[in-house]
Image (cartoon, rainbow, N blue to C red; front, side):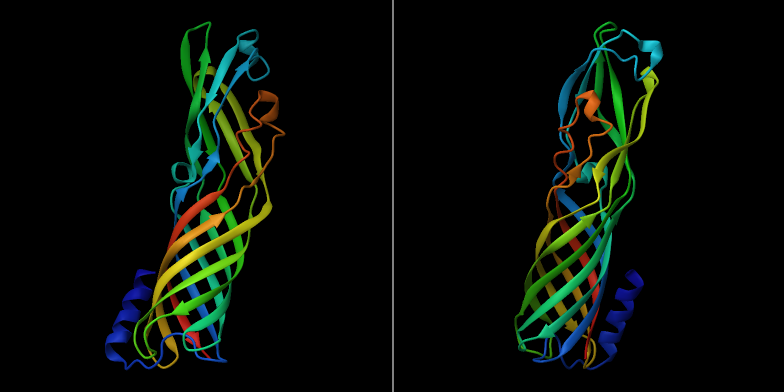
Length: 260
């Protein structure tokens, strides 16, 4: 990404620029990539539940009761910044407006963190509970409208709005209480599901040549709730912690655009 930016700037400095943005009745193709920073939304909610017998989780603790105290955890705490890349196709309605369609993939690596504690009254101690969540993988298909400002032939700022759907892959979670030798591996947590997605963009389109442009863009993205899978965590009384999953993020991308 850095190499692409340096090359584009060098080209911009040495070449004469002609057009930036849409042209009526013309098609454009854009390749984009960058980061997607989560700013709001939880991977799971919090809950406090009593477990009357830890024996099913560790036979050595048969007859010992505990209280699970699970806290909510945000996308930012679990996954941090994701990578995103995609393909955008647009059709110019005028020299200031275009409609577009975009296909995009977003990926964040496996996330591990403490999700709560297990309080054991018999020992009067709270034991840390850790969670490891499989990678976040999502595919988006969206349609939108983009409005450009200033005159063609120079760098042009723009705003855009989009609406569509995002399919998020299934997510598994491994929960562990090391001090009690308790492990719940690869518990299904979210099912693969399509959800509503939307966004607003702001950016600048910088001409590199008569047909090529460099684009810097940011904005806000919204993906609605995911579909919880309670098959493993339900018997523990934790079925409500995955009744969420919505994600609000701020993408920061660079792109190359070609007008045809």
